[in-house]
Amino acid sequence: MSEETLLTRGSNVINQSNAFEQKLAWVRERAAKAAAATMQEACPDVSSELSNRSSRALAQLRRKALEAAIQTEKTLAETPQQLFLPGFEIGAFPNRLNRSSLIAPIARGSRKFYRQAVMVTRGKCVLEYTGEQLDEADGDLVMALIAFAQPFLFGTPVVLNRKQLLRAIKSGKIGSSQYVWLHQSMKRLREATLFLEVRKQDGSFHYAVGKMDSFNILKDVSFDGGSETYTYTLDPRWVLMFGNREYSRLDWGKRMQIGRGLDMAKTVQRLVATSADPVQRFALDDLKAQMQYASPLRKFREALAAACKEVERLGIISAWRLEESTKGKPQLAMWR
Image (cartoon, rainbow, N blue to C red):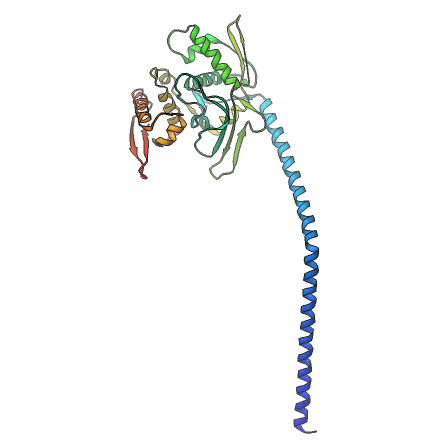
């Protein structure tokens, strides 16, 4: 057989082999497409079933988490707690509340009523409040009630003579008008309800108060006219808000010396006490909102200057000035 004939036959074998491989590839491709089409038809049902199972599992987890949170807060609200603050005296208050508009130097007269309103706060926290706007005198009363309750378990009744209470927060003669004010303020605090959620610097959850079980500033209060005493109970969750040393301690003697009509100076004292920084700066727009000051900025600057002069006079701060920030915004700078 000639060499040419062998080459021709070899070429035919190679060509047949190539044709077979091409045919096999075509069959595989068709099979793959058919399988893919089958999967596409079947997958919606499978995906839907998996999605339904996942949704049901997630809903169950959320329900269990909610039930656990409700039970946890209920336990905290009902279990008496001891508030232990080294060197504790009247004038201690949680920083988160001192930096908020919960208590503000409002003008006398009718008060704004809030219903689940989001209050002005600083830092990573949310404060919702229902009740009448509280003023600095109300704030003094709350701090006094916390101080008198400190030897007892929070969540248990405390009996306190009303004159003894007023002498702790009022200077001068105590008469009928002071007793009327005290009774009205106690009612305000009993009706006041708040929700506070605090997060850490990294944004993770820290704690919440009043989310599942309502939190009243005064959990319960009653008055006995015969003995002239109030019996009041503070919610045990106050202890939570004082935790991790997140509270301020005011110089109460200096606070009682703040002049009449200068409640804004009391707000400044509370605010500057929330930080140990030797120099503190606050944007005027933020301060104006926190202090619930409705008049124009020009008048606010005048009132703020008078307040700063007062806290400087009493040695609460060593110096202050109104200045512009690096962004050209008006701000208050204070030196401790």
